[in-house]
Length: 148
Image (cartoon, rainbow, N blue to C red):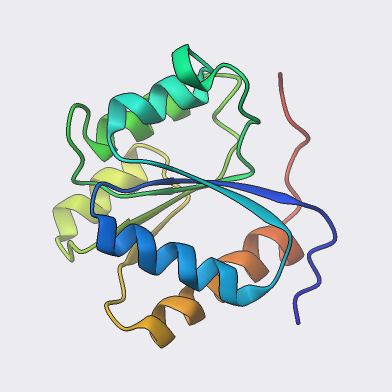
C-alpha cells in the first residue's frame, strides 16, 4: 500500500487519551513498519527529544505529531524549543489541533511548524490524514539524515 521502505519512528504528543487512541489506530491501519511513542504533556515531549530521564534510550523520531493544548508546556512552547535546537529542527513537526483559529495557525508557522492540520474527529478522515502525512513526508519529501 505505502512505498515507505524503512522503519519510521513517530512521536505523538497528545494529552487526550481518545485522540491518542485514534492516532494509534489510524497509523496501525496503514501497515508500514513504525514505532509510535506517545507522551501526554509538553515537558515529557522535551525530555523525550533530549533523551533525558526515562527517555534516555529512545530513538530520535522521524516525525512529530504535536497537539497545541498540552499540560506543563504548551505545544507552541514545545515547537519553539524544537525549532531552536540544531539537533532537532530538521524533524518534521505536524501540528494536529482542534483549533481553527487563524491566530494559532499563524503562530505555528511563525514558530516554523512544518504544517498545521485540524484534527479530524471521524476515524476514516483521520486515517486519510495519516496516509497523506505519511505519503508526503516519507515518499515525496527528501529529509536530511539525523543530525546527532
